[in-house]
Length: 191
Image (cartoon, rainbow, N blue to C red; front, side):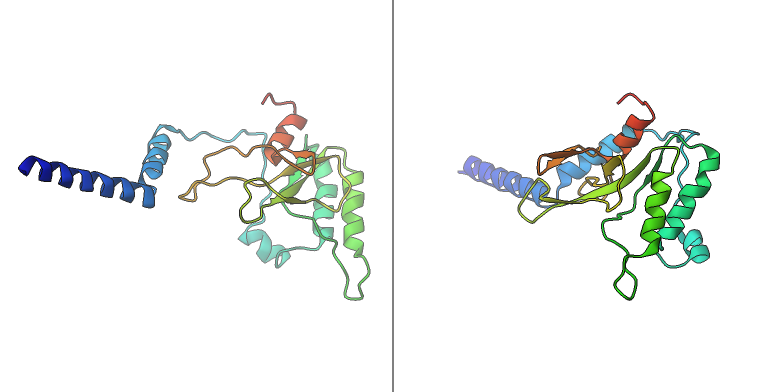
């Protein structure tokens, strides 16, 4: 009788423990923390420059999103540095419309800057996922004509930290690769 009770208690504790682990994702969190322990920081490549939209730039230029003319001016001015590639992690999927409903001249300025760039310009696409679907169902593509696009969808872990490389995906028989992969491809990096 005592032995049966012992096994019963052990069984209940094991089931309770497994339920706690699965409900709170403790196994996954433990795996993530273990992997994080073995990762090392490394310095970014000295040839990579990030022009960030940060608090300083917002205080100098103004509230974001900015007029497309700002981005056009950036592209025109950066030519003197002879970049190998410039990528925008900004969604340009809608036309900028003036108050009177006419197409904004800033869109034209940005398209002209892209067309006149002496380097590849990569624009961001973004996948749209619908509830209940694992694969994207639609894509927000840029309105500008450009030869290179890359998606900006990055999978996060349950704890909000990004540990997984984004993967290519297809939407309506068209393949989209991550923007970082597109940049690497354009500069001749081996993937």
